Length: 277
Image (cartoon, rainbow, N blue to C red; front, top):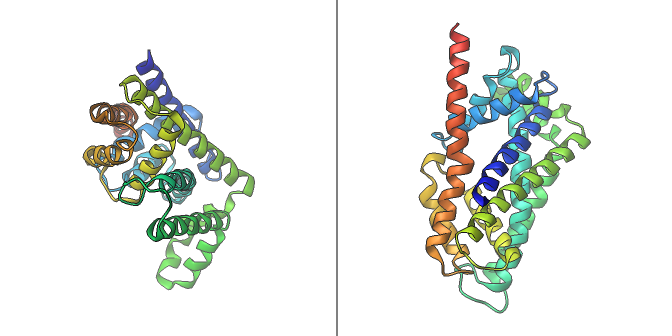
C-alpha cells in the first residue's frame, strides 16, 4: 500500500513540474496539461544519460513548435532556477539543524565551530544572491547586451523578462510543494523499510542530502552509487539501519527517475514516429 502511495506521489511530483512548464512556456505558446506532462516524461528520458540532466531541455522542446523550441530552453532554465532555490532554502534549514548537532565531518558537536559557521554563512549568502537574481532576471539580458558575442542569443532568452513577479512567486511555491512531495516519498520509503528516526530530523537530513547532490556534477543514470554514499553518511547519523537506507535510496531513484524515464522512452518513440509520418 505504501509503495502504491509513493508511485502515485511520483505522478504528483512530475505533474507539478508539468504545471510549472505550462506557465513557463505560456509566453511562447499555449500547451495543454496532458502534452506538458508528456513533455516532462520525455525530458526525463532524454536527460538520464546527460551530465546534470541537461538533455531534459531537448526532450521537452520536441512538444513545441519550431518557432518556440530554442526559446523554450531559457524558459526551462528559469523553472530549474526556481527548483534550485527551493533546494537551497530547504537545504539551509537542514544545514542549520546539521551544524547544531554535528561538525562538517559528521562527528557529534555541542556548538558550531569556525568551519561550520563559515559554511552556513556561505550558504546564506548564496540563498540571498540567487533570490535577488531570480526576481531580477532582466540583469541577465543587460549582461548579454554587454558581451558582443552573446548578443546573437538575446532573441532566444528575452522570454525570461516576460514573467511577472506573481508568476515567479507561483513557480517558487510550486517548486516548494514539489520538493515536499519527493521528500515525503523518501520518508515514507524509509519508514516502510524500518529506518527509525524522528520524522522532522529525517526531513532536515534529507534536505542536506538533496543540497549536496545538487552541487555535485553527475550523470543521472550513474548517480545511484553517489546517492547511496551521501545518504548513508547523513541518514546514518540518525539510524544504524544501513540496509534500509540504501534500499530506500535505490527505490526512490527507481520510482522518481527510472520509471518516468521508461514512460518517457515510450512517449519519445511515439513522437519520432509521428514526426517521421
